[in-house]
Length: 235
Image (cartoon, one colour):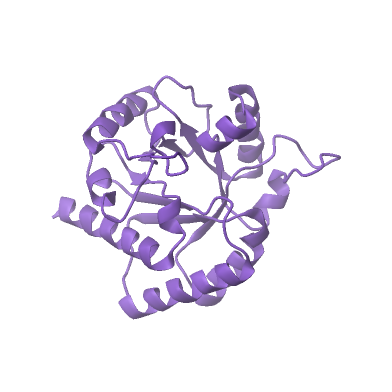
């Protein structure tokens, strides 16, 4: 049985007031709906500046959310201006994304650098979501989840559209065969309307939504749709 994995990536959005409003809305929905989420892992990845607040709100509101970083440094503690090392991240988060297409594109991150980041993260005990742009790109050892995200499909791309779910499933199948035992999720313009069509695929264990995670109501509904789809498959 698949255990759903949903990773919400806020990217470089939101300040303190925005984040508090998001948690107010999400907590209200969680309380009102009284859903019992089972066989699902939901991870929220806000900007570094919002990790302390997010940790406090999750604990205060008793939300079934884990926290993750959107990236982490390849360096240990030291004179590395602007870097957030794994020890610092682990004070607030238990997960981290590494290798997102936007960072590869905008910052020129290489496989060598990304492999170093994974090594540091795993030594610290962080769980790693490693992003692959296709089935040819290599993943390092030790990652916990692989996110298949075709660069042309991510919502930050002008005109980006989601990949056909059946086509995405075929790519994910190849990744599963290449890295047996590692769950593979899909990222790329995931929405409330299409999430069920992705998680219902045999080789897609979850999703990595970006824009769809910025609105608490949409994100909650997306999770709900995904879990309902999973329940339907099991009955």
